[in-house]
Length: 364
Image (cartoon, rainbow, N blue to C red; front, side, top):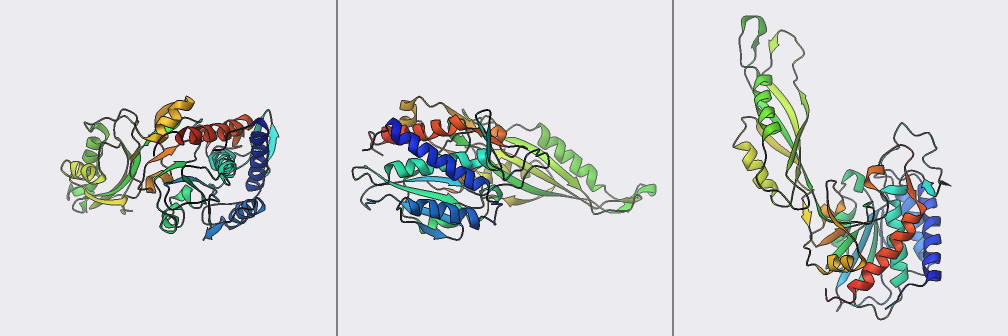
């Protein structure tokens, strides 16, 4: 089992910084990640690592992969959102200032990705590794696309558990809220506004929205708190000022804790509102990893703190236990002049390695 030395960590760190600079300089909007996929593939090949590619997803297994051993996935994404209009700097010009590395994707999730790649390289040719490792640099995370980790999982060997790299200040996100989007339609009867005719669909929608804004689901999560509902848009097709609308549409954004299934949430809401409900998004389910899981225990041994994450990630698409953790801060994601502290990347590499070293001492 490989243990860290200062020289090894420094080399991994510098290689990670160099790769991150290259990724920042290469536009990689969701569905347009082919050039960053090329860069990651070439980087691994230069390290004499055999790589695999499917669409814009790059993955590799450790040198001494053994089907008899359990397999751990190390995953992060290389796509980015489009730059915030408030950028004062060139989003594709990676530069260092005040111990920070600036550039689009530096924090979300370039820092996590290059730190996980460095960690994989550290363990790559270890003959005594008690488990297998797979590194997967995937696409379309920012849009929850189908051609990222979701499609790649069918190509990978069986996974026992995983680490998902996202900016969490190297805290362990042991739980993550799911996203349920409901398209709701209140139905009324059209009529002439001046003659007080019809049945106003807006008023019916307002009553349902009021219920949604006040209702509290009973079960609260230790790490994620209660289910949160927000109505985020409302509209009618009616253009005439003097016609009572027969239909009013609104959208409910619901962040679901691990205490409920999506079906339970939908059934509870449908019993209490009159509007028609059509689920738009049901893929991003809540996730949770038990405190007794070896990954969490290994993190505890490193002194890593646990918390619940309100944001979604590719973790929601995985059907095995996962821990979301990585360098950087989620609050910096998608902001103008995005950055990550240089030392955060070094800390990320060191703590990822320590986490896996501790995991090797525990039976998965």
